[in-house]
Image 1 (cartoon, rainbow, N blue to C red):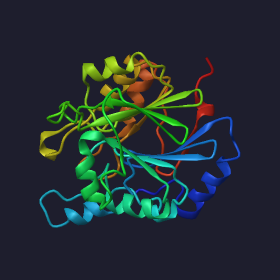
Image 2 (image 1 turned 45 degrees about the horizontal axis):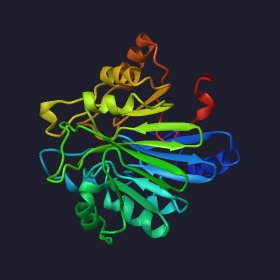
Image 3 (image 1 turned 30 degrees about the horizontal axis):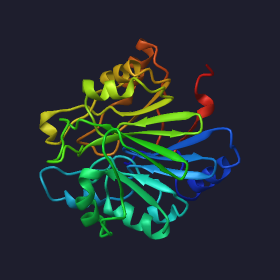
Length: 285
């Protein structure tokens, strides 16, 4: 039986609409895997959305089935108010044609942030003009719809660059108003990433916790303990875990993350799919 979303479909849309009246905070909803919907002053950002069963279908009759664990919270075609979306790298759960193509269709003005190294791949997968995505490399900045995106390298599991030295895997530091959020994409611990982040004041870090196991035959990520250590090292005020409870073969128990965060004194929150979190929960410093 699938894990149930906290809220979904029309109830989720109603929750998003109601939150718009609170202009003093930003609001976040977990949509599954590494996908989050960020709302701030009536603007909406999607990070790495995966809102389909494309991988389950693709691998159904293989020796590596992608069996979904959590129910789908919403059809991407119903999200017709999105200003900007991100893709951190080319893996399908972070660059899903069955999510992004309908999303772009219902949001004609949508901007898509990608690693510049992946431009041709993205255009091919999304059947879009190669000039449509907005590309970043590490250290680059772009402002879109009031959000400033800063490219941060990611190591999934190596820090890979193309022939022109551009990152194939990236995270994004997202600045808006008085806040800064770091969405790591898929990554393991790497000192260069830490060094890039320590000069910023980070309110919220969103980090994967599913770890790395050779038998999965997929690139790995931070473990729960490593994610807590990562958040502490970059002095993130709050950390929220991601990249679990989507596929049975590649998940982790968030309880171990909670135990480690409590042990290390790291402020944290674990969300149920579809659940809202707001910046009102950040410490007042």
